[in-house]
Length: 109
Image 1 (spheres, rainbow, N blue to C red):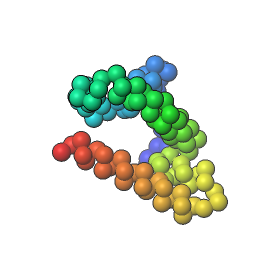
Image 2 (image 1 turned 180 degrees about the horizontal axis):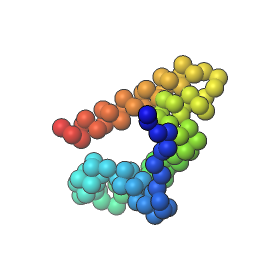
Image 3 (image 1 turned 90 degrees about the horizontal axis):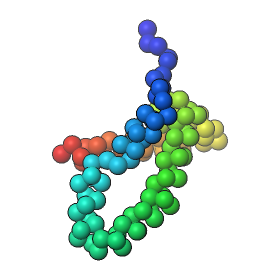
């Protein structure tokens, strides 16, 4: 019989480090220095940081909020918060899972 207990981080620092490691990703580790060197240095860095503040951080907060509230996979969490149209919630959750799978397959090849 499967347990319904979900693992949790033991400290805030551990969670922050895991989130930062996930956000950085392999593409940024290798791509960031190359892009900075070949595309104008400081101008690229300013635009990169601006996009991180305007797009990436709000999306991270939204994803964490949905995940914390739903305590489930993307499909289950979206179905729990999106009660008006469950079919659309399932579609968005499935799209999120497929997108993550495609990104992982890109880095694996």
